[in-house]
Structure formats: C-alpha cells, structure tokens
Amino acid sequence: MILFFFFYKAPVTLDPNTGGSLLTISENMTRSKSDKDQPRPYDTERLSTSTVLGSQGFSSGKHYWDVEVKLYYGVGVAAKDLMNNKIWSIYMCVCASDMHERTPEGDVLIKTSILLNKIRVQLDYDKGILSFYDLCNNTLIHTIRHTFTETVFPFFSENAKILPAELSVVIKQPR
Image 1: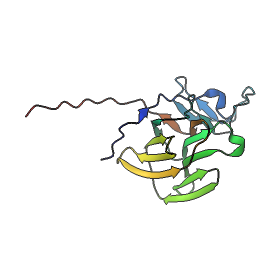
Image 2 (image 1 turned 90 degrees about the horizontal axis):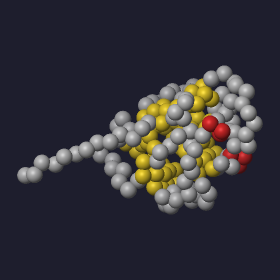
Image 3 (image 1 turned 120 degrees about the vertical axis):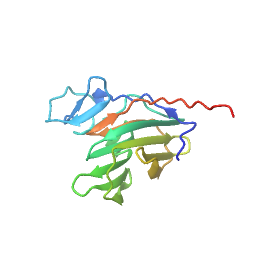
Image 4 (image 1 turned 90 degrees about the vertical axis):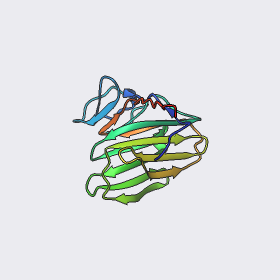
C-alpha cells in the first residue's frame, strides 16, 4: 500500500487563458477535451493546440492531484515559459499504447502496452521529485528527478479530467 502522507491535495483547476485552440475546457474548469480548431482571443499565455496549464503554480512544498485520463493524454508540470520546452510529464502515444517521459532534454520511452484510467501526479518541489502513480492499483508508474528553479504549473493535454478530493474516515474500535 502506498501512503501519501505529508503531501497537500492541491485544488487544481484549468486556466482557460493557457488552453490551446484544439481544446474545450469545461465550465467548472476541471476537464479538457479535443475539439475542432477554434478561434481564440490572443493571449501571451496561450499554449499549443492541445495543452493547458493549471491555474495555480508551485514554487515550494509537496502537492498532488488526481487525473482521469483517456487513451491519449499527457500529465505533469510545466513552467509558464514553454518557449524553452520546460515540461516534465508522462504521455501516452495513441498509435502504440506506449508511455513516454517528456523533459526539456527530450522524450524517452518508459513503458509499453500500459493502459491507465486514473493517475496521481505527486510533486515534491523542494526535493525535485515528480512521481506518477496508477490510482487503480496503488502502484508507482514513473519518477522524474529535476531541480526546479522556477514556478511550475500542473500540465495537461487533451482528454484529462481533474478528480475531486475523496475523503475517507477510519474509525478504530477500542480493543
């Protein structure tokens, strides 16, 4: 069993000002999906056609958020300055069901034939650890290590839905 103590459940919502022209963002700002290319007002923060950032950035601390994904997706963190490709994520390639790591240094194949429904993205900014967990099996999928030097924001591609926090209470009976 994997425990997530001492990490803060980040209240993540999508920032529509960063959403690409091929994305539709839900009214409650928690879901992105592919759509036809749409004219969007010019915004200096706008990303490529099928990606979007979370509205809150992190420059310290331990945070996590849970995401429901479809067949093709990308999740992780990114700096606002995407001109320099400052993205640390995992993504699924449609054609082969292969999972890749994306960092500013390049893309690397990390797993083949893996299908996921729910992913926990866990960021320990101060230690430079970005971890991805399969929520259905409570298993670690992949870890990226990097010394972050600027604010990073949750990063999503198409077909992502941010899941709400789930509360559970455990009552222990006296012996």
